[in-house]
Image: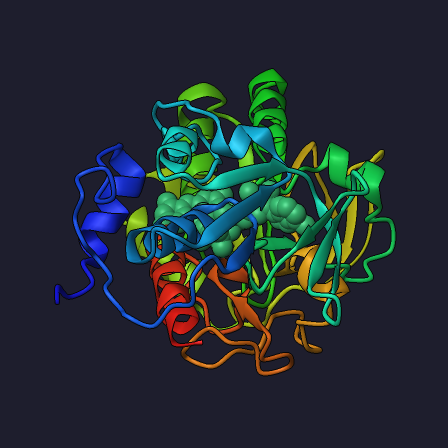
Length: 345
Ligand SMILES: Cc1cc2nc3c(=O)[nH]c(=O)nc-3n(C[C@H](O)[C@H](O)[C@H](O)COP(=O)(O)OP(=O)(O)OC[C@H]3O[C@@H](n4cnc5c(N)ncnc54)[C@H](O)[C@@H]3O)c2cc1C
């Protein structure tokens, strides 16, 4: 029996070679019941890894991957764009080649008794087992003025390609000599290491394109890790001259905002901004909340086998899982681990 080869699977997902296509037997267990229906909700790295690993382990299971955003699975390739998450190329073709069914739909509810997931289209997807892999969504932080219009004007650009493009365009269009504010949230987020990186990215952009502009970072993260990572990333440069890092000693609380006037009322005083990258706090994707898999933290408590501690009938993988690392590598690993759990079921 061959040991699970995580690296090859990750490499296969990310660069286009496929351990599955190569016929490698990555997982091998004997007792999986024939023709079980497995629904996987979410086609990010965790959901895709779970689907491909399960197919490798069992050729007879009926695997359905449900993804709401066709762009996630489309056969694209190319470098990672500024402010965006890594691009997984060629995933759609790999899933098709592995005989994994794909449904383009957004799951709005899960009926646990009937073992069925209801799509926004009105379709019901029956399952014997379900893997929930919805990633993250913005958490309502109760900040006065931070409504959907404000979030449009002040994009988080944290996982949404549309918002990443909007932020890029806003930065490109602003006059030199203006004030950019980057807000870093408290709590867990997808890719925590990306928070200080975002500050570095914006500071570098300003240095190159808008040299008399200034960046203020409003840091609500706990501890000084983000501030320290930023400081060490720019240590050998002069980028620090145009950056003010607020909240190193005490996290900044944003209390009220006005996206039309550019005003932010914070625990560190009033701030006036021209362009704002407002990264919101996050929690497990909406379907995890709606289907009762998330606890008060907003994340899904699970055992190390990815099984939900709230509802053992569900397996939660990727960023939504409370224990997640919230990296691509971590998401893929959890997807593979989910397969082990399914095969033991
Ligand atoms: C800006 C940014 C930069 C990052 N950079 C890096 C990096 O450089 N390196 C790294 O390792 N990690 C990085 N990450 C983190 C990495 O992208 C995530 O950890 C990883 O994508 C998590 O995978 P996932 O499958 O759990 O969730 P996601 O990738 O979020 O995928 C979830 C999928 O589920 C779908 N979905 C959600 N709800 C439903 C529903 N109800 N019905 C149907 N479909 C649904 C969504 O459309 C989405 O496609 C970054 C993240 C961000 C936000």
